[in-house]
Length: 293
Image (cartoon, rainbow, N blue to C red; front, side):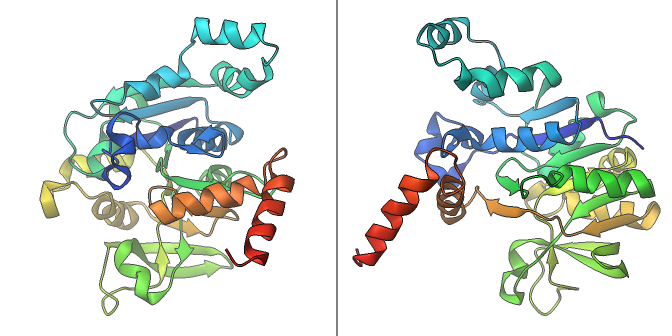
């Protein structure tokens, strides 16, 4: 199967970043000099994805505007001789069709994915959680590209997993797996935020998935769980039993930018990799910590 479409759920309220997210969607909060969302868009474009389905909510029109043409701003930037600042966004616009779908009620991640059904239809598709950033080493395939390769060779849904400490399992969806070969597992079930005692493993879901279209029919039949939400993990368990599902650890540096500490870590680490800022920023940090302040 060929993965041409990707879904990014972006309807969350961003309550952990209030008051900043009162007017600015959390997906547009900057990591150094780029909105968080742009890192994910770059990841999927480099994987050959042609269509992005944004699942947006009320008050998130700024995300749609980001991908639109702003004639006044772009003309001003060109006149000041800084057209290179627009190069990234313009290149993305050329190779990517962006479709926005309104999620009218916040009924969980499973419901957000289900909202993409009218556009994704009968095709396999990727899902990227908007506040999870995956930075792969230079010259390596992007995170979604790594998942796509396995999904396309096996014709099975494939998800990313990460190893977490036992004390952290209650924060994630945890997979019950059977080893196939090095860095490849067959998923038997997924448990949403289990206790340490009931966790089937320490392999957690960091927010990168590739699904066959069968997930839609399963989601339609999935009953709401806690807080009336449709859990994607429940549907994943059913899909794993019905068709099969693979899991792999992505070769990438991962940041949870939906968490305040993770957001700060992402800014520091990516500033240290920035072509213009890495030198002076590193010097600043070394000076600051050498003086113990």
